[in-house]
Amino acid sequence: MNLVEDLVINRGRLKQIAEQHKIKEMDEAIAMVDRSVSELQNLMMIIRMIPLNHIFNRLPRVVRDVARYDGKEVDLLLKGEKPSLTGVSWTGSMTPFFT
Image (cartoon, rainbow, N blue to C red; front, side, top):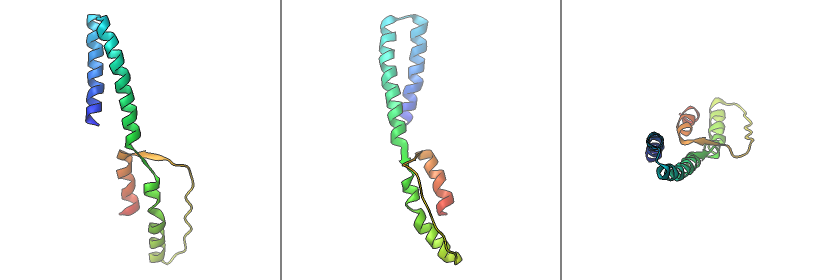
């Protein structure tokens, strides 16, 4: 992930240099690099996405155990498509559910 961030930063710097020196060949090369880096950025975001069902699959047991512990009857209903969270959100989401 850090390499992609470095590529994005360096891409911006190369664009600035090309604009300052008005080098046509460099502009064309940077445009190609720009497309590749943008595609790589998009792929990294997709890779970082974690399906929420990894969290929600644990909930029935947790809810059942807590209900049993408290002596209560609980109905758990999970609805929805397949939403996702980024890996950063994932860490924060697990803590309230399972601590």
